[in-house]
Image (cartoon, rainbow, N blue to C red):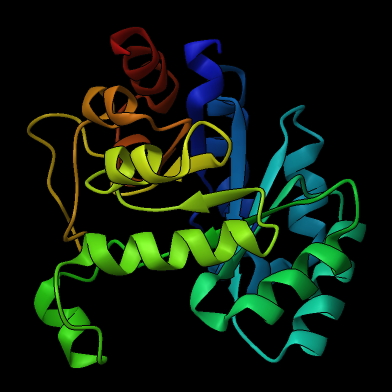
Length: 227
């Protein structure tokens, strides 16, 4: 894989007019553009179409979590936007993940989110998941892949364990990546881009490390060259 293609730039902006200059700048330097909840809530499917027009596949990060019938319909609608990847929560269960895969059809790959990177051991215990995060991640990852998910979203700290248990098949998309010395922000479980790739990550999601850089395109190039 070309190292540039490992990078996914998160378009975490309140509108397309705010996102567009950043998106145009980084698109030549990354493999994917990510439209998340903030931008999708503001612009809807138009945000996906606008991002795709920049010549990169679009990762639609909606983290769907609802009853299977609702998620199947939402995945079908997401497929119609032209997105290439769509997230659902693995904790929605086997039938929900299967429904997402059915609704997505052949052109949209489903990624199952295991445990949010903002949660640490204490945070997991508060929502009823006792034990280290890696245990919950492995359980949910296996459930999702067995249900037909094409890939998984997990923190860089669990990538190696997921690869060891599930092998090379699932696409592993990894947020919570910070260059050495960068602020963690609200991420609890982080690693550097190099550490994540060595552990087995396929795609690195980069938000603030690019968005807050003086030159986002140069920052993306530097990360790709460091891998």
